[in-house]
Image 1 (cartoon, rainbow, N blue to C red):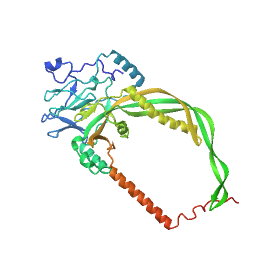
Image 2: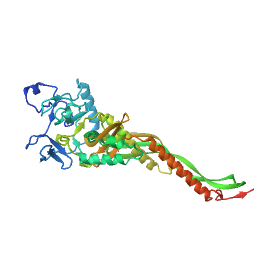
Image 3: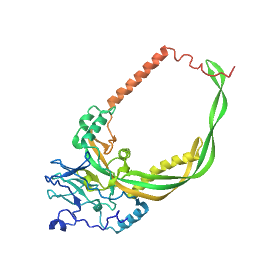
Image 4: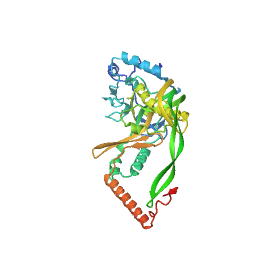
Length: 406
């Protein structure tokens, strides 16, 4: 766990002047400069390297030579409890010192990477100054901003019942932001004991009396019944990389539906991948995230229990699940995010920065919906009229089997 927690690490700012070194509030940060022209280097999703904003020179990413590790969950929770108890300060990013213009500024307390507000220099701050657990792996961007805009515009244009003016509000390129979102992944071996009931369907022959064409007749129908039997048992399920978003700045209904993520392609964390993008620090702690992961796991466990119970129907009355060998990773995943206001309400859209999957909110046009409903009712009435003219409804009850007439 020594590589996971950086509580006692002392970071030295990139600036080496005496004033900066004496300022305890300035934290470790990184910015990358082109050797050819001195301009800023940013990560290029297209070429998967650092590209100069000015002259276009490319530089390879120095990826750390280390494996993607899983960390013991129980040990982490215990260590976090100790660190929180011993910590006397609120660990958050305080002051960033721009390596280009020299200005001091602060990121939002939920972010650790972005641009200097005075000269737009990309700056990446150390997450260890803001959170006890730092990211050790990430998925780099693959989708360029231009591609993301095309995906965004196509998605907006394909929304049914959207207001006609929606496109004019949403096609603002400056609203599309590339950002790395924090996630937790959890592995766990589960053992679940359960009690419930197995239901087997059988049929009863039932004779009933009805009226057809003014005559009382008897008919037979087969009525389904269920015979329930008490059952108990145990199922074991192994979970790998259950993914939980650790951000609160975007709605869960959006970020939970950005999958699939190609987590098998995670690379060791490097600040060079983040240069030119924003990046968030986690706002959902590792133990809070695991509570959400348990809910995700429970749905799968219930499916396995129902399969284990068998029969035609299943009832589950009690489940007791034990977790063993639970581990986790803290990863950063890339998204393009857009938001705009329409009639005073904010709508958010997020694009998976790896495969272009898009999820979002949108307004609805009451006028378009009303016209569609009226049109549907008109079509249905017209169809009923045609069917009536063709005599479709005449003698509708003649298909019944008559058992006895009296």
